[in-house]
Image (cartoon, rainbow, N blue to C red; front, side, top):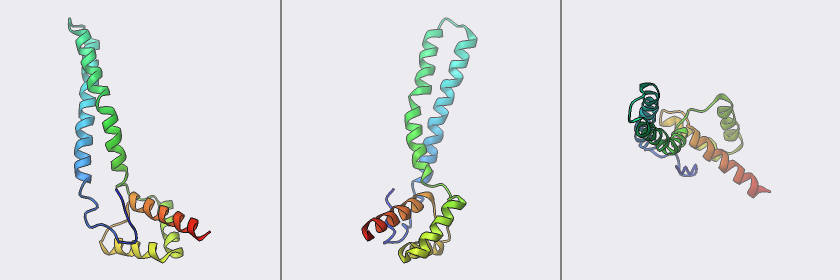
Length: 132
């Protein structure tokens, strides 16, 4: 997700969050089915042991990279930790653009999220680099 702090916070910042959560839960459910199938194949000792073992491995391993990718997307929506909030306040005291962005987020009745913090941090680093 791209955030430009000079244009203000996007109004629809949380529009994809629900979709990411649903996809993540579905992929996690597939992995759990694979795990349960593997446990069943191990303890049941059926004639189809090899096929069940292979199918369990497919159900467990195949969704894993996609779940990791979606999990990374969900990380963008995390709440800020206290040190990150303190950094954001310090950035706002040093740069009026960051302060204005944080005020616009507060006017939207929400707290800044991780992706906005990272955008502000990147903007501050870029401003410091250009100042030198």
